[in-house]
Image 1: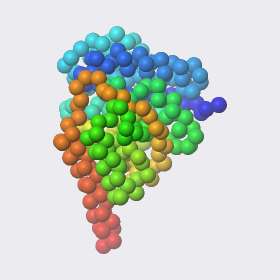
Image 2: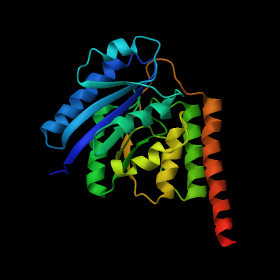
Image 3: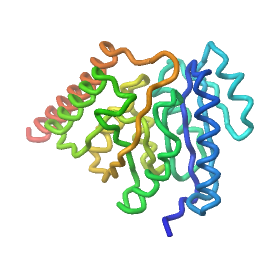
Image 4: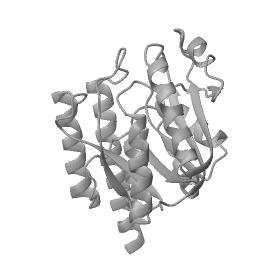
Length: 246
């Protein structure tokens, strides 16, 4: 029998996702209920951080009593900021996050839990394929570039350093919430932090679908932010090694 997780919090950030909420939330509730009935998880909570949406997202979310809604109180609005608030206010031993835009499938969550069990890791990441139907050519090339830089600079074994579908143990929370990024670049710094801490990471092939609604990612500005994180951490690491040798 697969390992039992005592408790699991699924945290989903939400900014103007009124179109995808009625699709993503019922599927995630069904997956979580099924995992609980099978004895894979004990208690669970589904936490959605409403990052000051201006559309009907809040109205849609209130129609699901199973959802714990957090309205962002952070001074800086953003993807990373919303996730950190959700993680901090979550109650479970294990944490999961994914996006609300319908790109990640709730039905892939059991695969991540299987990988935790099989690998004996306490951190699992979904890996998107370059040819997945939700992966544009531009984004695919960008993800490939970040992966290669992480391999060369950090010795990363990962095939997808920017994935937004992860499960990890709460013991990593202090490192995660202390990350300085509040935007989409939060994810790549999160990955690098785990690599630098020599955290074993289970990689899980997942599906990646076309998003619903307008994309929040800017290929140029967010792409440059990702590169800045990759480069700045490497430079700080080099300076730290030189300093320790003096």
